Length: 395
Image (cartoon, rainbow, N blue to C red):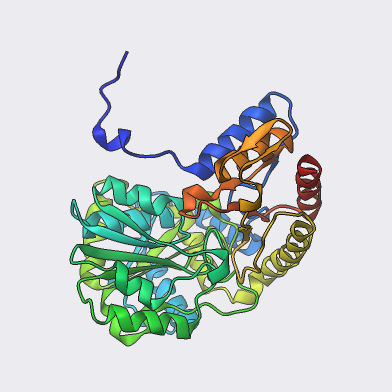
């Protein structure tokens, strides 16, 4: 029997990261000992000073509907954060708080894109960018990169990809899935191209900004010529270990912020009141309050890179931020291991799940079919055991 679902939902792919996590849960339910290195979720608890702020908000009886675009006090705190961390001047009227950065991104695409518009996606990119563009009936245009280019695109590539139909380009630095960070100089070179194309808007997804090791991220909106057409996206999930609290936000030209508020008002309305009150404390806190998590991620990065480099066939770069490694695994394509022929990265990820009991994510989902994503947002013990299992399965 066929069900009368809309073309919209039928055209939408399932999230590869969530699908792999669901598959891992199914195998665990069958009794298998699966190590999950597929989800981008810190394994730390939310810091106590943020939890205390939430408890205080409950005791102060914050329980009513919130303004659609967020509490004024939170929007003011976000403006302070943008100035402190990014040298960006925003007014509260330019801020919209949403139920996670994913909703922030969806709002922006919904209010900017028309059917047939083109969205440029420098590869690799977060899995939901292209899916959300599809929902908007826009066309995703990938700009390829590889481990040889440190997963970055060049100004020449950007210039070649822009057409009269190009409406939006999405940058994500520190990047999910590769962990690379575009430098100020690299962004300025790309900005020289974008200056020539004023019809192109820019979304800068900076959700991993505080999880950086060897290079400090730079905000695209800090380039004067791009400020009036750049939407800066951020949130609390990653750096503050607040994935389930669902707080994301944008700083944007006021007309875009107003449009996002209108859109959100018809879909979810205002974000959770308790999470918003706690978020005020989080965004105003000095970065030193969460440095212990960043330091631990850096230690884990060193461990997982060293272990992967001991396995023949894995080609690994050193990510500057986030908590992922994105190895090139093309050396395994065309090989038959334990009776399984590996044709591509999706086959390889399934092989690791079934034969090594380790959940990763295929690079196909990120526009990089030569790679797989491995999250090191897990304990050192789990990381060491997972890579040991992978090495054993491949040997």
